[in-house]
Length: 200
Image (cartoon, rainbow, N blue to C red; front, top):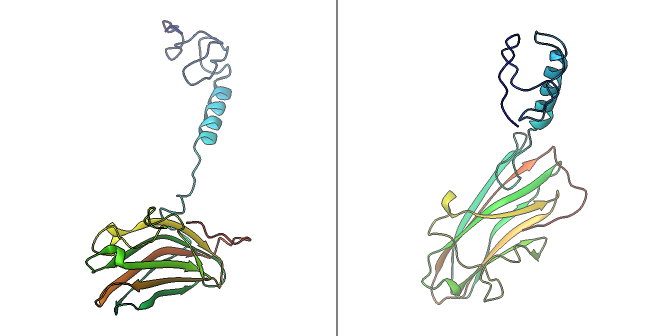
């Protein structure tokens, strides 16, 4: 489509009447002056802009909705050799949906594979494909030596009221070891799922 010299009577007209512009609108027939369908064109442009600009919520794994209460629970235990410890136990509150979005794990042992972190909801293992793929997806290695925000691992889990999230830590080494877990998410009273879903 070539640019056309504007009509002297309409300095804003750069296309022939009936010819489409870059936005896909057809310039209406109406002579060189104002009016002649310009209101209709403006209404169509505004409608197209309104339909094209849609505000959507952030993905559930990124940010808690403004209606939600955030969840950030953490715990650490010194676990003796050959022993296990339930580090986290969280019961999803009534009246809404609970979303776990991230977790972090840490231990100060020398050999990561001497330790296990086992997350469960209602006794069943979650995050089935997190961990070491060469060792039955055992979870034993964190991202770094802390459980701060830089150590958080994405993992989206939805929980219904009354469901129980637990993290068990197992020390398979020969010495006492500090083991920690952090769980981050949110509780939203405006969202209630009708079917159970663990995700991960």
